[in-house]
Image (tube, rainbow, N blue to C red):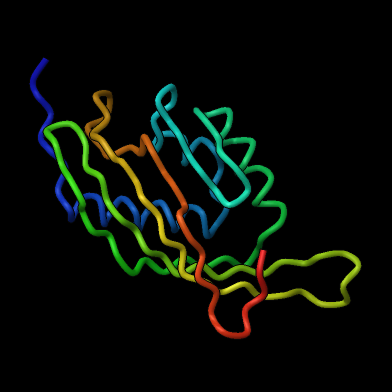
Amino acid sequence: MSKLAPLTKEEVWDFATKWYKKLDVHAPMVEILPMLADEELEMEFPEGPSKGYAGFEEWYQRVIRIFFDEVHTLKEVTPTSSTDDTMSVNVVVQWEASIWNPPEPKTARIKCDAYQRWVVKRSPETGKPIVTKYIVDDLKYHEGSATL
């Protein structure tokens, strides 16, 4: 088997853009899972950690039933280290979402910048980037935003 080429910053930026578009439209799992490693996948969300496809799916199915009218605007993808196999990056994304907390009479709008760290590698099966680690370090809410 031939050696896979190292990832580039441009590839990872493009990958992150596609990732967030899928989250915005609540894409089906069949479209999202190929963007993630399975056995080595570790994710840390504000709601808690998840591992592998099963952990991600549990988190995803819960949040797509809570948040709607989502808009993710990618602001930063900065490589922090790179090897032949992986690229570690800091990601900043502006996240907006509506939420309804029963029995409130109206929805609320969340708007914040999410500061994240990812580890991405090239899939040996597809040659495309996949996430192995995804950590949400901080949410900085904009003025007037609802909070989680």
